[in-house]
Image (cartoon, rainbow, N blue to C red; front, side, top):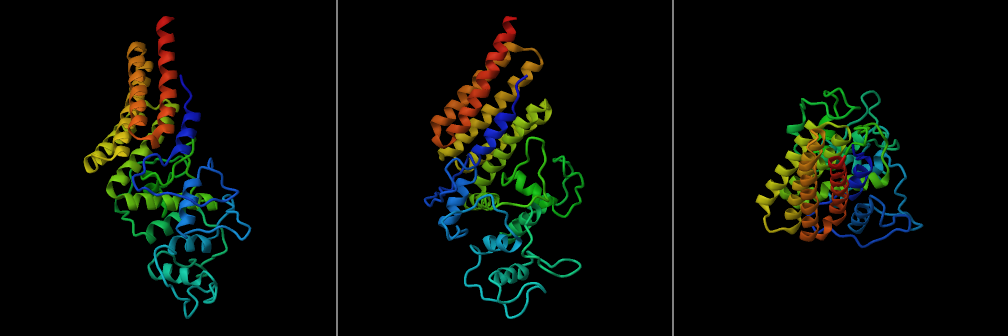
Length: 336
């Protein structure tokens, strides 16, 4: 049976695959090369003045971010002409501190509150994934009603669905802002780097600027990443469900924006994934003729997608490689 771990890693590197927003990046940093997985996000946010480099010209993408820095990145593009507060927003935030105005605004709109014991903001402490997503999504006024009471445990390291951060994590994974690792862990308590924060902020902005069409495309991407994870675990039922969802989401996007080449390409990619899952199931059923046929159709659909919109070429090549390997394996099994 095929091992999909490398393909999963490639898929995650290639995301964000489907972007209709036309966001571009022109700036550069000597320590952020074009093969950096957060390259596009860092460059775009820097160009828009949302996140800056250091005086020496570097960006330091692997440097951890504290809560004060994270809040500035979130609040800065949303609210202009903020004034320093007249008094302490929190006991440990001096009104003259460089970040005080961002903390005050975040407090005013209900994004942050003080520590339950001390009342402190703790701006110097490294921000973790759960905290950052809460601040980010609340600041952008994202509707989380559909994510407050999930019925299904999705991640190995989040078993308690009553945890305060679950709605933020579930929304972010559903819309392809974040994704689990190959072991299906999300690590909500992990401290975040500058590159990671740039990526999450950028992905949310892409979704917002692209509207409902982009949101459906991002949801489809999230399901596509799950497909290979499920296949790697030989969980064919879940893979089939994710493949069906990804196709449904791209069809919704296509109904909203039928003339956009990226949406057409996304739909073909979703069809290709469905064929891959079917081929995998054929292999399990030892129906090698059907497996070869479905894998070949997956290859053709992925190739058509790349010809429809060049921005999905890397993703399409990854699918074509899997399909080619699967077809070869099925052909060899027939000959035995």
